[in-house]
Length: 287
Ligand code: 13P
Image (cartoon, rainbow, N blue to C red):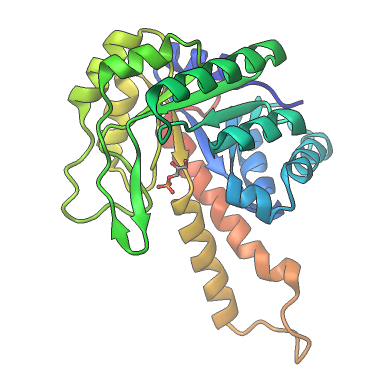
């Protein structure tokens, strides 16, 4: 059964480790992540972007697929199904469809509207026993080949949003989605420290988990980060393994590639990436 991310993140914050959010894009990714979490006895969060939700045929299909896998694979570790960077409409659709957690990214609304919408969604999530993540300070990334710098959140604004009753808070600390540019200034631990001091027990979320040096990840965890999001790294390992398989020319004598065999090396590569991250984040054995 899917669970809210609240309990696993409260435990992670208290135990000074982080739970990985791994984004899913299809059946193979989902199966690989769930099997790795079960093997390592680690709690896990499956992230679904609105684009991936559409690709996978809608949120109800995603919920059906994940619930089916939890049962058929005999998954016993805590698993949360979480909307990543949700719009107001997307958040409502995921609540309706049976997700156990949502992120409402209202950073582009004027602050009063962001607060009002966040409050409304917090109330619905509380009623349904779901967790909800909010973001303060936009998280940069590559768009049309231009890499935007990661913003640093205003700690007072973080405190204000945390007080609305959200479960976890993503504060921008110079992190960005995708690959980091060569001249990246690194994470702002000063900002993180200030945010954690003002928000107390609130689990903090680090987006853009791909490519952050290990010592920075560990320091961020020591300063209150208890959820780390990873997508690009799975994408890179999946693509590389698939490319190698195709280049090896393992098609079936004119019948093309067996789709199950074609996707297997990528699925194995994702298992390896997820394992490496769970070990780094310290969530192994914590389920
Ligand atoms: P990366 O794609 O940089 O790993 O970031 C993932 C993320 O933060 C999803 O919200």
